[in-house]
Image 1 (cartoon, rainbow, N blue to C red):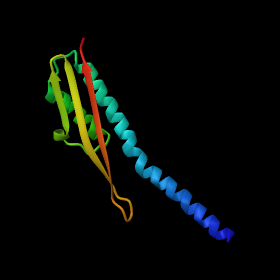
Image 2: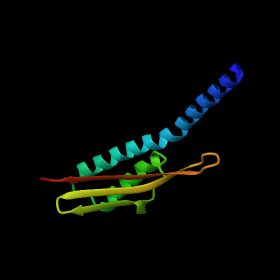
Image 3: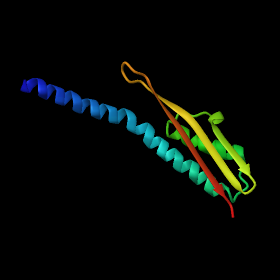
Image 4: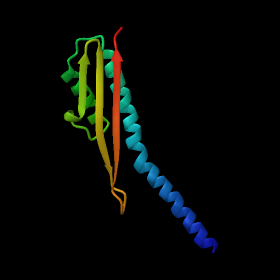
Length: 113
Protein backbone atom coordinates (compact mmCIF):
# COMPACT_ATOMS: atom_id res chain seq x y z
CA UNK A 1 0.00 0.00 0.00
CA UNK A 2 2.83 2.41 0.82
CA UNK A 3 4.45 1.63 -2.54
CA UNK A 4 1.22 2.40 -4.38
CA UNK A 5 0.77 5.67 -2.47
CA UNK A 6 4.38 6.64 -3.22
CA UNK A 7 3.87 5.82 -6.90
CA UNK A 8 0.73 8.01 -7.05
CA UNK A 9 2.64 10.79 -5.29
CA UNK A 10 5.46 10.63 -7.84
CA UNK A 11 2.99 10.57 -10.74
CA UNK A 12 1.20 13.58 -9.26
CA UNK A 13 4.44 15.53 -8.84
CA UNK A 14 5.51 14.72 -12.40
CA UNK A 15 2.08 15.79 -13.71
CA UNK A 16 2.30 19.13 -11.88
CA UNK A 17 5.81 19.79 -13.19
CA UNK A 18 4.82 18.81 -16.73
CA UNK A 19 1.66 20.98 -16.58
CA UNK A 20 3.69 23.93 -15.33
CA UNK A 21 6.24 23.42 -18.10
CA UNK A 22 3.40 23.32 -20.65
CA UNK A 23 1.15 26.16 -19.45
CA UNK A 24 3.46 28.79 -17.93
CA UNK A 25 5.42 29.83 -21.06
CA UNK A 26 2.34 30.95 -23.09
CA UNK A 27 1.08 33.04 -20.17
CA UNK A 28 4.53 34.53 -19.53
CA UNK A 29 4.91 35.39 -23.24
CA UNK A 30 1.46 36.97 -23.20
CA UNK A 31 2.52 39.08 -20.23
CA UNK A 32 5.60 40.26 -22.15
CA UNK A 33 3.49 40.96 -25.27
CA UNK A 34 1.05 43.04 -23.23
CA UNK A 35 4.01 45.11 -22.01
CA UNK A 36 5.17 45.62 -25.62
CA UNK A 37 1.66 46.70 -26.69
CA UNK A 38 1.28 49.14 -23.79
CA UNK A 39 4.72 50.61 -24.45
CA UNK A 40 4.00 50.95 -28.18
CA UNK A 41 0.69 52.75 -27.53
CA UNK A 42 2.16 55.02 -24.87
CA UNK A 43 5.26 55.95 -26.86
CA UNK A 44 3.62 56.48 -30.22
CA UNK A 45 0.76 58.64 -29.02
CA UNK A 46 3.24 61.52 -29.26
CA UNK A 47 5.04 60.51 -32.47
CA UNK A 48 3.98 60.46 -36.12
CA UNK A 49 4.69 56.71 -36.43
CA UNK A 50 2.13 55.11 -38.76
CA UNK A 51 -0.32 52.37 -37.83
CA UNK A 52 1.47 49.92 -40.15
CA UNK A 53 4.85 50.68 -38.55
CA UNK A 54 3.42 50.07 -35.07
CA UNK A 55 1.81 46.84 -36.29
CA UNK A 56 5.13 45.70 -37.77
CA UNK A 57 7.02 46.48 -34.55
CA UNK A 58 4.56 44.45 -32.48
CA UNK A 59 4.62 41.61 -35.03
CA UNK A 60 8.43 41.38 -34.99
CA UNK A 61 8.58 41.34 -31.20
CA UNK A 62 5.86 38.66 -31.08
CA UNK A 63 7.88 36.55 -33.51
CA UNK A 64 10.95 36.96 -31.30
CA UNK A 65 8.88 35.59 -28.38
CA UNK A 66 7.55 32.67 -30.51
CA UNK A 67 3.96 33.88 -30.24
CA UNK A 68 1.76 32.52 -33.07
CA UNK A 69 0.53 35.89 -34.28
CA UNK A 70 -0.19 37.22 -37.76
CA UNK A 71 -0.17 40.84 -38.87
CA UNK A 72 -3.94 40.63 -39.44
CA UNK A 73 -4.51 39.83 -35.76
CA UNK A 74 -2.93 43.14 -34.72
CA UNK A 75 -5.36 46.04 -34.95
CA UNK A 76 -3.90 49.52 -34.55
CA UNK A 77 -6.02 52.67 -34.72
CA UNK A 78 -5.27 56.34 -34.35
CA UNK A 79 -8.26 58.41 -33.28
CA UNK A 80 -7.42 62.04 -32.89
CA UNK A 81 -4.90 62.17 -30.04
CA UNK A 82 -5.14 58.53 -29.02
CA UNK A 83 -3.65 55.20 -30.08
CA UNK A 84 -5.66 52.00 -29.64
CA UNK A 85 -4.05 48.57 -30.10
CA UNK A 86 -5.94 45.26 -29.91
CA UNK A 87 -4.41 41.82 -30.38
CA UNK A 88 -6.28 38.49 -30.39
CA UNK A 89 -4.51 35.17 -30.80
CA UNK A 90 -4.73 31.51 -29.85
CA UNK A 91 -1.98 29.21 -28.58
CA UNK A 92 -2.65 25.53 -29.25
CA UNK A 93 -1.30 23.08 -26.67
CA UNK A 94 -1.12 19.34 -27.25
CA UNK A 95 -2.23 17.74 -24.02
CA UNK A 96 -2.43 13.94 -24.36
CA UNK A 97 -6.05 12.99 -24.89
CA UNK A 98 -7.27 16.58 -24.88
CA UNK A 99 -5.91 19.24 -27.25
CA UNK A 100 -6.19 22.63 -25.58
CA UNK A 101 -6.45 26.18 -26.98
CA UNK A 102 -5.49 29.19 -24.88
CA UNK A 103 -7.21 32.34 -26.16
CA UNK A 104 -5.54 35.66 -25.45
CA UNK A 105 -6.86 39.20 -25.94
CA UNK A 106 -4.45 42.05 -25.26
CA UNK A 107 -5.26 45.71 -25.69
CA UNK A 108 -3.98 49.13 -24.81
CA UNK A 109 -5.24 52.65 -25.30
CA UNK A 110 -3.34 55.84 -24.65
CA UNK A 111 -4.70 59.37 -24.97
CA UNK A 112 -2.62 62.51 -25.34
CA UNK A 113 -3.69 65.45 -23.23
